Image (cartoon, rainbow, N blue to C red; front, side, top):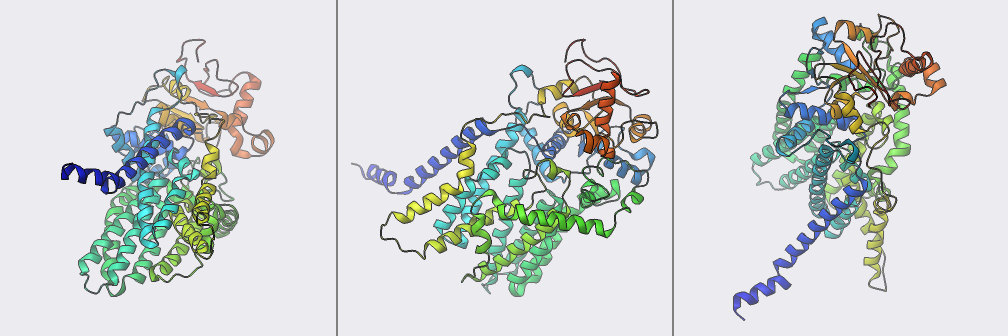
Length: 597
């Protein structure tokens, strides 16, 4: 044989091509699994946050700026309080003051580049909403990048066996696969946090070398500050991580901690200031409606009462809350998190190894310091998640953007895998295959939730009730783009129907001083009312009768059915056939062909 051919065969059998073929096989296997998972487990969005971010991204992609079609009464009240009677934002595209900008901007970029098809052309054959599939695949690509990042970080902190077990266990996490198709930015934020820790690791290594120039510390500080800014501009509540990260930099950066900290803070402030200034100019607050999450789910504002309120005196309304209300919310939610969420972090058995693993000292100084960093991060995220809990957590207790503890899951898998191998190394096996069998069995146990979820029966692809995209879109098309709807699921109307929709007010138009008429008569006419199972399934005694404002629209529906007509004076009287008893649509005039739904 020719020398060149022999060398090529050697590389194919034992050289670099073996590694390349392994990598190709792994990537093809992952691509096949993603396809299989999406075919069996994909569901349309069920999270209001996911639909909200997606419709804001679409508005941005279409050149309407950071605007929203999902209109919260609280947002109207904030704009009006800051800008006067003419500043309620209902005259055209409503400025979005609820979402942080990074994730909607990323989605807008996707919508500019990829062929999104928002219109459902054949409702009878509908199974999956194409834009949501693209967003899910994008998040799954981020998940793959997260797996690579976790592998390299775990290998640097420990060794290859720990890295492989951590990566495989994370890749087989049913919880993360569910988040990948949820439309939420959770995987993106977990990736950002993983990169921050990687930069902190590099900073620690640089600090041990006295010959490292100060410019390297400046560069690492700039990188950490930029990533922190991206995290905060994706989820405002992650602002609590800033003092923890700054404190850790001061701990590990040695004599050159000052330039690293200054660079970090400067780039962080430079990046977040324009957006916070924009919010302040619109509402007089730095975080818009998101800043009032701490007041939601308190004794004065249970459920979604605050976000649906349209107070005449906003400051007086908030003054109803005393410090004891916040304290009660903190302790009640903190108890729930410690009892339920904390032991289940990451949705894997590895969490049982992670928590005790944090208590074991390591010979590596950075690992010992990283343990305390993670403990501090867990503590601040626990407090923030408890105080920031809103009705979104009630709607979906696990798959929601307020689930902050899940962001440290990569470190759960890394430290949990490290403790597993530490315990395994204490054992001696007479039979050599015992060790790999135990490792494989442990990985399968960690993967059990995902494996079981993929077994029959197959999941239904629709998040119904109440979300049925073809019905929502067709119903919304009865309104033109300049008309305003009201609904108990305005996020879905905004996303699937692409129409302006205000959340149902706390009253049901019982008199002309109510919030409904304040919007209808003085701001913008409400020309369609769309109520779904969210309202129709309201409990009769606890919510309709005794629930006060929580069940007013349920009582409205009940009164309308009993009287076979809407209350006297209500401006929306026309209803198409086929909606009741599951849903109700009322309009100011007939907009549909008689007899059609």
